[in-house]
Length: 303
Image 1 (cartoon, rainbow, N blue to C red):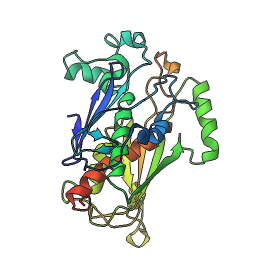
Image 2 (image 1 turned 135 degrees about the vertical axis):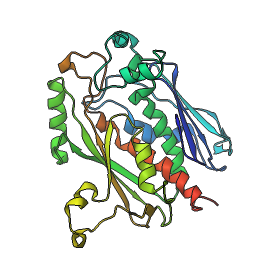
Image 3 (image 1 turned 45 degrees about the horizontal axis):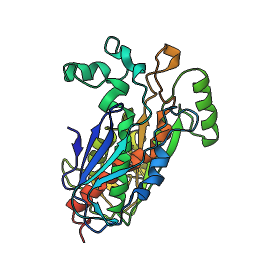
């Protein structure tokens, strides 16, 4: 389904080339200061504009439709809407007959009996993540003692930040795309957050992260590297023990595949040559909404 969370519950709706994209957030406590301006910092981090990102430019002006009155949350569900203003649906006319490799086009057509909105990928588009970022802004307000810091750790196997611009520019010149790794560090989550057995912190965060288009891998702490070590060499659990936050910094990494639609293969449309560049704030948002929910469930999010 299109909803996640038990108490802090987030439902995303809309399509890439429809009227717009929105999110409804239930379980928000009353009295939080919230206005349209509060969304701008994170929305700006997600916007395109730098080399390697899509030439599609959406203003991403949030419209608060419910749940906020006189600058504060009311306790009712919050609904935020973003209008789509820069669409070129004709670019996708051929998808019905020729689904794009590596995209959800063919699978979506089968699942929805051909009634899916295929323009720009419909509900499977990266455009949907603007709603996820908006939910993350509210979730972070539910976690006043926490801080989130995600950034690009690797692009096309290169881990030196000084080289990032050159590998992106090279991919753009070649009409190709490249993948990357985003690392996220979260401080200030108290020990005890997390619910064994099925609702472990790692499991719930990974569940949310895999909703982000292009995610192909998630690892916590030393991740797969820990499998190559002896017990005496293991030094970092990523802030989670037994599926529960242990009070230390939570650290995880997310692998993004390269965009499948590339000019080099003759596929049209306006796609990111390096989608990962826009994803650090999206990764933060996914983690924040999970931790807001788990904090309430664990008793750490109540007044």
